[in-house]
Amino acid sequence: MAAGDERRSASPVAATACWRVEEFVVAQECGPCSAFQMKTVPECSPTGFVERINCAGSKRAEYKSSCRSARVDARSFWRFVGSMLGLAALSGLLVLSRQRLLDRRALEKVRKQLEAI
Image (cartoon, rainbow, N blue to C red; front, top):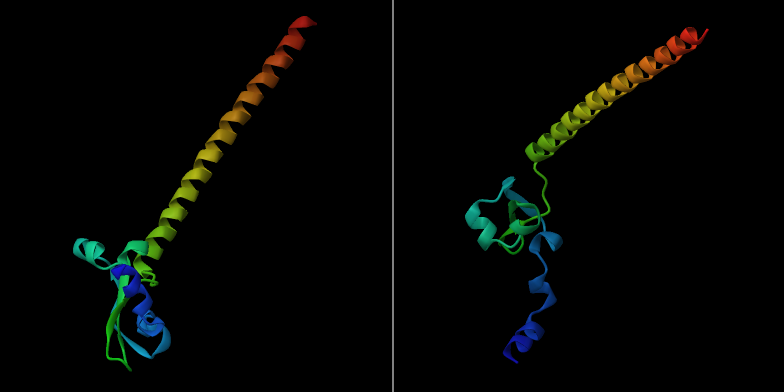
């Protein structure tokens, strides 16, 4: 019962993050969470990155998990580009090998037709 009472007594204002309703200043730019933060800061769980902010009105320091790291985005982009280049090269090799196979079959067919004459 005590847990239910605690849930009811918590006001929606206290549950709302201060950065959603107040002006804030970024205290620490978006960066990867440390191993310790991954265990202790719940905001680290969704993305593995966190941004520390200070709210101006309530003077609270909180963590904001909805940040994106430019470094991780750049790495993901280049990983995607590399995989697409690899896929393009593989597709090109498959096309060349298939073309050679078809050319051999056509030449064999012509050779058999010439031998039949």
